[in-house]
Length: 468
Image (tube, rainbow, N blue to C red; front, side):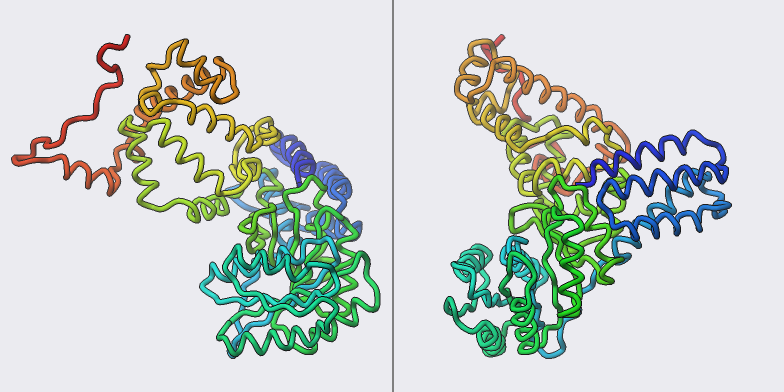
């Protein structure tokens, strides 16, 4: 979403780094470019002006720091101001002293409100809570059924009224149901409209009055730009929002809504949805997004995603195999399955700091992983363990079985063997390969017989008998 803005900032900072000191003229030029970059990204005009003014105030005579040169200090100032513009701090949910904690979901039709109600329920469940979803959108056909389907996917109960019924009564009954069944979080999905109207506002106002929510979140589509900010302003006048849930952050819009909503509405972005899957949802971290916009990556989110899908012992086992040269294409296939669980590959690439611009801009699609997977699955067990036995006839058979070409099979095998060689070399690097993992220690101990001799036979050599 922020590719064009990131590119503009990268160009600005590249020129800054070439200067030993910054004159007032240099600062003015940088500020003009920053303001233009923000406006091109569809940032609200007053927000863009205020941002530039704050950067100028701090950058004139640049703040003294022995650790940073003037250019680095301007970059730091821009980063700090971006974080502040995006909301400053990550929202911390405070739970009601007397359960349930009530969350009211509001928004226009098509913003993804119902789906994000389920995503939020899944998030609460991951925090150890017991949520209940309430379908109070009784006007849109099948809205309650959609919520029930999503609820089944995440194993969260759904309380819903009849189509055409009273949404206020449904929300009140849902609250009673949560209290009776011991549910400590109640998420109420309300009706939306294609546009803001008085009937919509009156209905959501009455529901809010009936359930007294601890949090009122507005779901807005980041792809709609400044319209999203105008929608947030209108709802805030009616409901006194606690935060915004921003959807479609993985889209190709310019991102102005994310950079404008906090300053214009006065309420932070609480959660962000950056994919279609129910797990593509988390707390919004202003500092992490600021880092991504400025090309600094987002290592913390990348680590958190990895921790969600990787078991510690499995990761240690995979590392041990890599360093010992026992990592096969079967192991590689297992690792691919884990990576796919972390979300779209293009999203993950954007979190890695220091990548070349060309790689970040490359269209890395999940279908590329599917093609590699098809090639590996077309191999025999023996070929996956010892890919060096794959000759011309085997390559042709694998290519035909996977819908690829023989050259693509050769390239995959060649790249895999290069990785194996590289990891064997890294095994001798102090602090990397020489740190024996717990799994390695256990295996080493298991291989020792009486007198410390190896009890188990060593792994077979790569060159199999009878094969040249």
